[in-house]
Length: 198
Ligand code: GAR
Image (cartoon, rainbow, N blue to C red; front, side, top):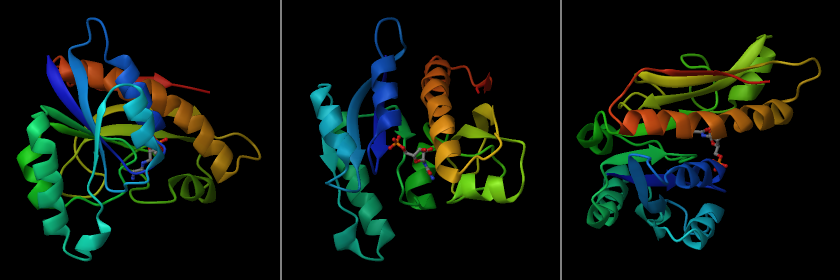
């Protein structure tokens, strides 16, 4: 049974879907939900589901990313995770944190990578006049929103779409995609999961 740590910064809707998926014959279980923000709404939701939680506030570390990442690494260590899932974790992680987790850390990003790395993905897709948008789960490498793609879900861009409307439809697909990818990944299969939504 693989042990999974889930890192969040906000409300944690993807985290909830991941935790809920890891039951029965699933090859993994959530062991801890961690955040860089002690106020992240997802922490209480995880605790309510019976999952251990922890917060390492990044703010006291200022610009010292390495010190923050060391503290996060030490806080996670007692849970001995096999896999880390970034699920709306909004701190960029440097190579010092990422390298030891090579091949064992996943991220979900709200665009069809390699398009629109970084922020404001839905607004950028609309500005570009794209006919479709979506989300990607990928292995985390030191380069931002890079790394081997493990799954994508596509949705059509609809007439009159706003960034918020598109984000909401993509989020529905995130909630399908991430659990599907994690199940496959935790069983040792890296064949990409490809989904189509509406
Ligand atoms: C999700 O849309 C996720 O794809 C995005 O943040 C949201 C978190 O929502 N992640 C990124 O933008 C990472 N760069 P959630 O807290 O409800 O899961």
